[in-house]
Image 1 (cartoon, chains in turn yellow, purple, red, orange):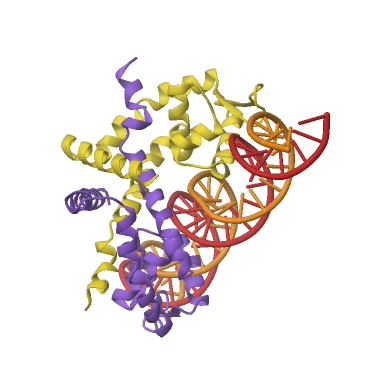
Image 2: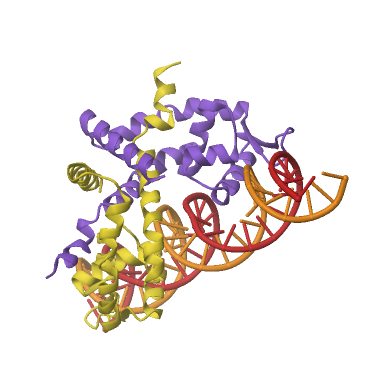
Length: 144
Length: 144
DNA sequence: AGTGAAAAAATTGTGTACAATTCAAATATG
DNA sequence: CATATTTGAATTGTACACAATTTTTTCACT
């Protein structure tokens, strides 16, 4: 049993619990998001727009770590649901500007209870959550 | 600005950095996994088989937090690449048994350098990595 | 002004991820 | 022993996720 054998075990790789944990938590969101007819990706998109109201696809992608290949279809679905409007920037027609609608604003009320419900499903102490938070953002920052 | 407004900010939800960080690290694997013609999902599947040699789909899914809907196509691709063999358990034909092949075993040598390369891309101190590791596995354990 | 490079979305193609359903095999029960 | 239930994979359908390419628009430079 060499050192490399150990390194190749699933349980010794930091990426795997990260990958699995992210999926499991997203799964926890599903019943709550189903109630407001949003997927997780649509939800985090709306979260940015609840705060910023308006943003082009590129900037939105930088916030969400997603590219246009992922965002274009997500935004089209949110437009069909009338939560956002998609239009070209008159000053630079290359930019597609996403703007939240009144219906989109209204959805925020229904969504506002989700974070509390989720934190009840994810048993982390205040301290662990903030430590986790710190390490993850530090890692995100130093990788991109 | 209510309390709920803050809770709905992307930056205040623990799930988002988890989700983004997992994706970014998987992305870091890509160039190294490309060299051995594996996707990340195929790689973690092979990691289990490098250690256990043989396993049915259900148990594999429990290790990887994946269901048959995801695993079936992944395993078919690994079989085409000759890294595994799929066959039914003679004692219980419902069980599909996945067995690593000689080629699959050989692939382990090429893969053995990946963990070291990844840890160079992911700047975490020994202590942070183990703290992160601990919190993630604790969370995984208490959620499922 | 004309042309080539750059930028931003959209498109295309591949590979998950997962809920829901189906199917076949095994087990339990009357 | 026949049927109902359960179990494990596979299938179906929807929704990302992302690399690579294409399209449109703008910018830079001659």
